[in-house]
Amino acid sequence: QTIESGSFQWSAPSNIALVKYWGKKDNQIPANPSVSFTLNNCKTITKLVFAKKEKQDIFSFDLLFEGKPKEDFKPKILKFLERIEIYLPFLKEYHFTIDTENTFPHSSGIASSASGMAALAMNLMSLEKALNPEMTEAYFYQKASLLARLGSGSACRSVKGQVVVWGNQANIEGSSDLYGVEFPNAIHDNFNNFQDTILLVDKGEKQVSSTVGHDLMHAHPYAERRFEQAHENLDKLNAIFESGNLDEFIKVVESEALTLHAMMMTSMPYFILMKPNTLQIINAIWKFRSATKIPVCFTLDAGANVHVLYPENVSEKVLQFIKDELVGFCQNGQYLCDEIGSGAIKL
Ligand code: PMV
Image (tube, rainbow, N blue to C red; front, side, top):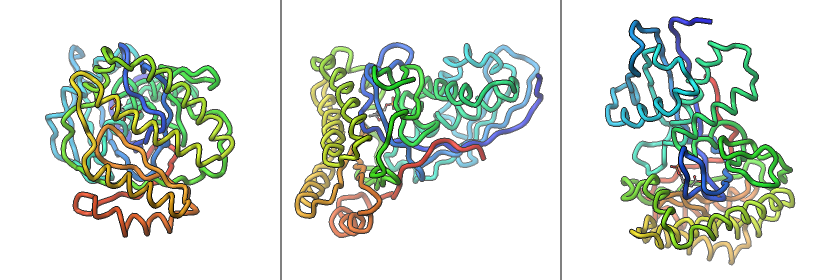
């Protein structure tokens, strides 16, 4: 099959890890398995326009962000194309225009690398499928996730499924270090439409990138124990997803968030990404939970923002609490309401 030109468009969501990926080996192989909820509203929409070119000696592409040229992302995309060329040998045959927009405000401190790399990987797989129409849907999604992983590790969890596992884990069938898979075991109704309200505490650029953070796990004094703990916590979550036990869920999820930040504080060099308001919010959530017994908890990414997680049936009360007591800790009072979603969508 040869194709001269055309275009595809995909949206891909962000995701929030419950068991955190922090530390990696060569080729974006995770040091431990992770599991995440896929989000629904925070996403990247990417259009890929492609046209065959005469010379096929170099990668050739233009990058647009919201319709305007975006030069500063070019080195990252070039590195990505170089990494995935062995999987998509046709890349140098085309000139690409990659036009991207996010549904969440830019510089909100929300990492767009997971949704952005996933959206680009989906588009490139659509071209691969157009060239090789016989591929199965299962292969399509698996390879899309593998490509996304090579763009940004956590992006492989933004391709398909509501709950996604990435990394080998003994009792999770089909799990792999190479790509994310939809969580294959039972999930209790308590997790249906689980809510994630993202409190924007600090919208500035992070002082330490996640690339540097992952690297610091190499010489980290607690790394080995941490990697084992991630396996243990994934085992616990496996049982919790089946039982629906929200008290146990909260313990694992909050401990994972604080452990992630503890790894940052105990690396050399050490650093702190939480802000005073991050801690204010955590304390307010604990106080609210112990007073009301409402099963609401927090998790954190590699940044100061707080993800507030809770079941749909307590939404009204939690949102009221957020408005009354937490909005004051957010930069310009900003927060984003999201919930569990099911992955990338072809537009
Ligand atoms: O995908 P990266 O390399 O940006 O790493 C993301 C790491 C965390 O967001 C902190 C945790 C995770 O599992 O998503």
